[in-house]
Length: 295
Picture 1 (cartoon, rainbow, N blue to C red):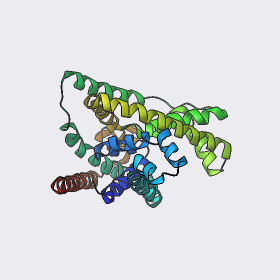
Picture 2: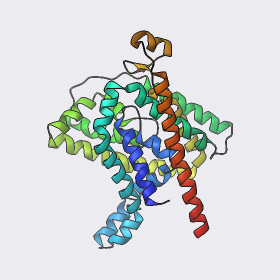
Picture 3: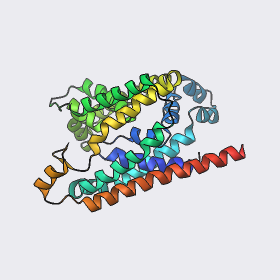
Picture 4: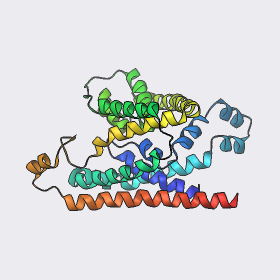
């Protein structure tokens, strides 16, 4: 896989992370880089630290798949900075069209992902478990609280796990924990102690959870992917284009409140999402074919 392709996939992941309810982990899974991402994150371990201490920087970089991580997170950060204002405007003024784009993007990649697995009754059961789990989490209600300092660490550890788990948005988990507003306030007011605790929680959660996921993928590859695909499917109701107060509704209910469904434009945006995802998958297949020929 070329690193330009990795960078482009990072752009899509960054765009997904901006939209509340959409997980960058979902795009990583659908775009075929999820397992490599988890493995690379897990490789930021004591072996990498020892290599750096010994001055073996090139070996540490290779051990962590550093170029892959640099290209991917470079794309994510660039996307966040470039698209944040545009996505915010779309959420405020054209939410149906924005949700339709991501709905088409995610839906078009699911068959490609499902065909990669060897299905049996056990894996189908795990798929349904993932669907139910995502639906149950999506129906939870947010709480309000006055956070203690230690809560920032816990919130960071939990939210970062959600961010790399397909189908579950880290920002949504922060809302459920009642920590979204406090963390946002800490960022805007540069409250260093809460921010350091939150970042420390993110680091601990990311390194710990990536090791768990890496172990599951190594030992129970298809079963783990079946569960993750189920989570993605169950979370798709969160990107249903027609929503009222953040809840998906029927076309009739939406039309009753807003008058216009924007159906034509929504179908067009969904088609753009399908084209974008299929183009990425086709380019990846071509790259893989070239790699096979060169090897």
